[in-house]
Image (cartoon, rainbow, N blue to C red; front, side, top):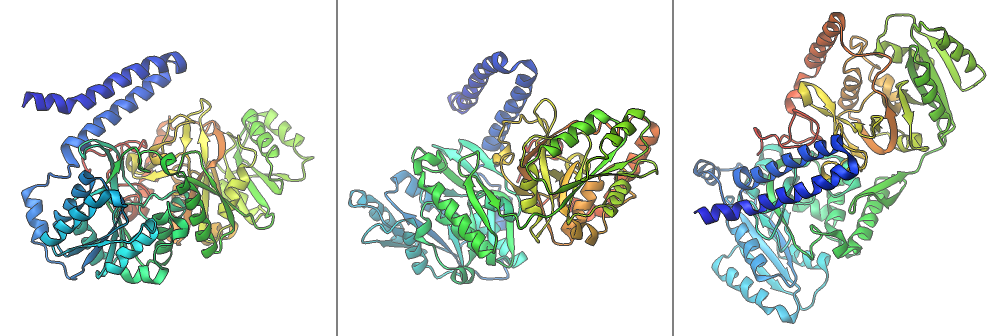
Length: 612
């Protein structure tokens, strides 16, 4: 027993040794403060890894009570799920583990359809599969005359299938024994025609989990940035027949292409936020290194491009910073006027820096509307006079006490543009084409608001979108991450759908702003931008965060902090008002986050109390 415990601890000890070594290097290269932050984050990661492996997410451990509940559960619909597995030179160990993970399913109405394109050197694959077929009539096997490629091999599996629903399963992966049960729950309770689950990547043995992918609910722009849905995907056979089977033109990213087509036509897409699929990482797998199959990247770009064409969206697809992630440059229609609305009170140095960065931007068809709000310093008014020669800058006076919502609403009344860009006076644009990067999304009719990447002056993240529920109401994603970090599941590097973005830099169509009634002036300071986004989403529009539009944000210098009894009381009232308005949404949880992730901070670490 002691030897077994020591063996279990070896991976953890190795990680601690590696961490110590990297810490010493980081101290030399990055200094003390950043190194401390990195060490804390890495220690938490090690603990999470240990927790996942030996406490909660164990493939072979499930309580007797849970097992009885599942096996004894009678669903209202009697649905057969056909599990498709194209085989190709599958190692014996992987093949046995894959098949037996299906046989262990607590939901029994399934069939396993395997089409084998293995070469003559791997006849053992056929021998193993035929033996399973004799033992379990739910298992079907077909030896192909030749390898047709991943897509056509999978289509041969479809020809074998008789189920009402289809599940895609790789030949070297493993299903949690509850996978099909929870899929059936989603189908029966939500009438879902497309279901996907969370997944984990493991190396060598299923106990050695290296990454857990806790996914958001369906997010079309996130899906266009990378195939975050991936495994496990289960969908109605009728839906598959409607959109067409797998296309060999996209071999390497055939699942991505199919998922894009299926989700375009699906009536009800349901995400099951539980780890129910285990993706094996080995030297020749995409899970280990995309360079093992570099043609996948080309196929993925082609799949996205085809998707855009079907959706009548004009844009070019490029590889993004992280392998297997993508950036779309949507074509900007015309040259719409952007009205940049900047509330201001004094702080000339900040305002002048902000305006200079706007003037240095590549998008020129803009106007700047400065909403002057009771400035007290003479140099502020002197600066305003110096701006009078600029025909694209207007200064309007709002003489009431500071109310961000009212100030912005007042600014919109004087805006001529079809596009509105709300911008804090303490921001400074970094990327010259930052407006174009936002406009390409804002011009879309299905998009209600677009937010940008904001950094603190020390090049750490200040805003990468907003997550509902963090800190009780909402807070920024990935706050204090370093500028060159990728974030959880590369989310600092991709355009994505989120529930809200900050009003410090937010672009939207004027017609959309007016449709939702603008900012709620009862929310003078706190959560007015989040409230606006909630109203936008309530109307059915999407909110998008793009990391390709980058600015520095010097964090509300003009307004100051909530440091007086009056300000604290106002903040408390606004918190109560926001909670009252959106209690239903807050109780449901952020659809673009995951209930397995913490609400104590925005670093996407595990919620140990609620992990499923």
